[in-house]
Image 1 (spheres, rainbow, N blue to C red):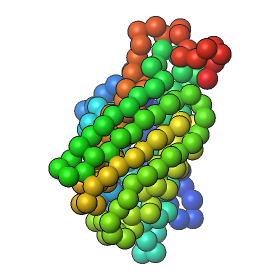
Image 2: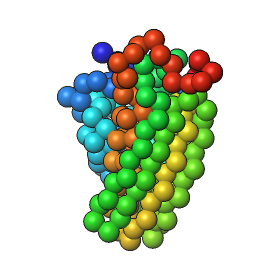
Image 3: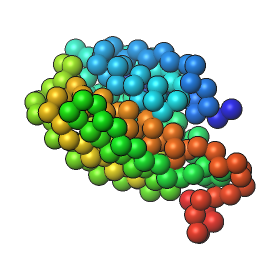
Length: 193
């Protein structure tokens, strides 16, 4: 079973996180930020992952450090699980509609960190969270996982827009890390990621 965990403590946050790529029965997410918990639940439910997150952060300041650090730790755990890329598909993509909104996410687990992000929120916040932090979350996750992530969305309702993005990311990541059935194969013409 492919699973890993990591703890990270700073002067601003304490994050305990474990991820299972193969066991979706684990779903315990408590960051102290209800809307963010809802987005993470949507991501792992549709990605068919198991995720445990216990986070404490300086929420008296704002949600930035907690969301950023969850992205960092989740990215590092994803990187551990990808390893050398043996036996995974490497690429994944998803298009997810949610009412008037639609999100497209494409992922390459090829060892290069990059984020392209086009999500035109209509307001400054959603669920008490400033919307600019979501780009930073996916940047932190992609950077620490060493994956290339392309995210594009369109819509009018910011809740739907955000949720479609998280669901599409979960599905795309699930496809990218899915087993090919050949554990010795590395999905690269170079022979290494």
